[in-house]
Image (cartoon, rainbow, N blue to C red; front, side, top):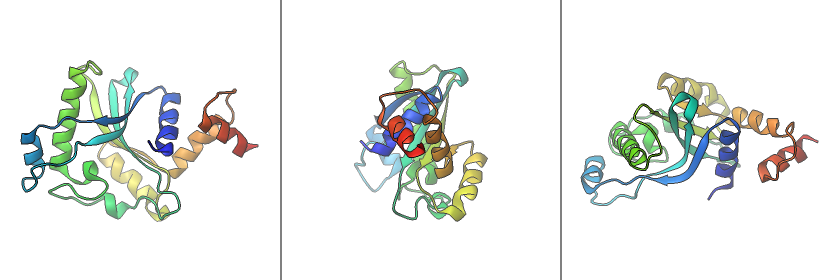
Length: 181
């Protein structure tokens, strides 16, 4: 489990979401063949963070990328359209894959009683680092698709709020307090 995912989970929980980490989706062999006809087996898709927001009947399936000490998330990697899933951002860049995976995610969550039929499922990306010149374009790209986007500045702002909170025995909160002193 990634430490940045844990921080993102804490941030989401502080905003009123109930969060499940590393949710695996159960695809059938038929669905796998629809996704990639030339491959008989593909790994089960895994959602980094499923964030349930009861007041808005919304679930956001978040991909979480830290990419610290690199150029970070780049628009060029997100604003492509593949017919078969490839690259790091399959849910964002391959419509057939996205439709099948999100349909099965809905089916799985309904079967588990984790959501009601009126709930909407959206995609989201939480990026700890991103190519600075791309951040606003990524934000617009996601907004046009009704997807959630938290860039590095959004993450930083949310973490900084921890420093103003009362004591909490959480590594992210403690770290925020140390850095803000």
